[in-house]
Length: 149
Image 1: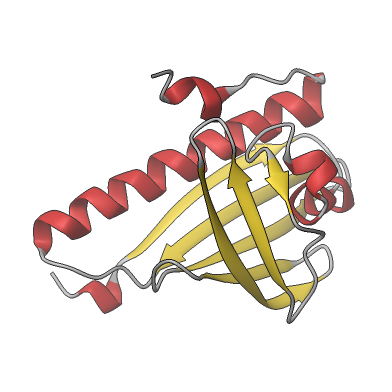
Image 2: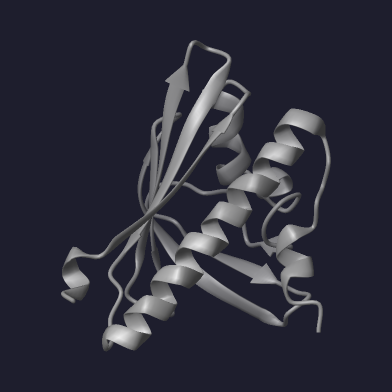
């Protein structure tokens, strides 16, 4: 398995306008409703931001390498070599298809498989939490409750 060819994708149709879905990822006041618990600031192109999951005592910094409003967010994590891309596709002005792609994994086949499964499951959970929050105003606590101990 060639790690340079490995791209993991998760996607979800959210029944909200694209501007609202995009804002949910760049504005930590919204993102904390469905993903991390603390952020050093809003996502802006070229900016370094820290995200924390306080319930687990972990966090990471990322750099926003590209940000095209209502279209695309591209980040690079500081703790590993992975890149994450969010793409926002308008669907008739009332819904948005969000696709999250991750690449840049490294390691042997077993390590790649674990990283791929973690990325797919994690970002799918984030999208499900976003859907519940934006469509129904419900904070599911999916990330928090995945590892209760």
